[in-house]
Image 1 (tube, rainbow, N blue to C red):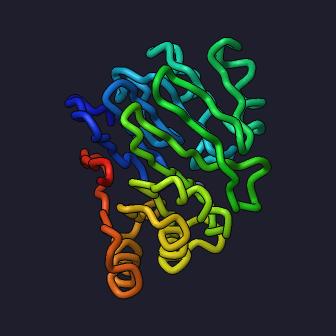
Image 2 (image 1 turned 180 degrees about the vertical axis):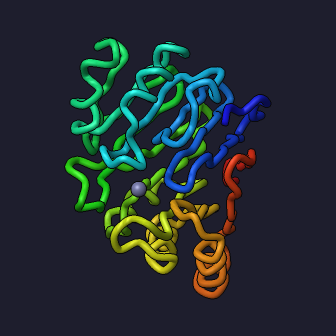
Image 3 (image 1 turned 90 degrees about the vertical axis):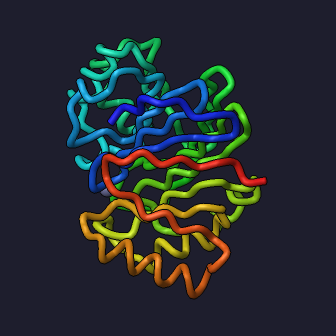
Length: 229
Ligand SMILES: [Zn+2]
């Protein structure tokens, strides 16, 4: 789940590592791990920050986050509810609470928490990561599409992760709406255990948003994305 090679300038690498929204994202200088569950702490060699989007079991595993943090001495950025659950497990100087609108700087890489439309969670967020080269990745976790996603997209998104199943209300169709609102260059269908959901997403994308690249990820594989020109 760790990424051995380094991305070049204006590039990022990512690995999707479970059937939910677990993603390792590597920029030229930082490694971020989002929503780690169903993995072992030893699977990660180096981490700069762990990002947690909400408190549900398929996104937050407190003891795993604590172990990963201990092993790699990384920062942990979490929505307020998850941060509360992690408070006694993570050193206070490494735990950053992220409500929508808050921005955390990891040197030249910026992590901004955005609104999430996932009502069953208490205080869910999405994360907009901007690399040191200005490449933008929007990780929407379990969020359903919402109108203001278009505002995040105004910043010219390079990659958007779109949930296509498992979360309440999520489907390949709602995933396509996320791609539509955000106008990202590359749309990645995830949060599913079924390749059929991803293929359905790709079919609708081809018809409705033919200019957007649809990248169907396999778990455990490394993908590279370059900054849009
Ligand atoms: Zn989920």
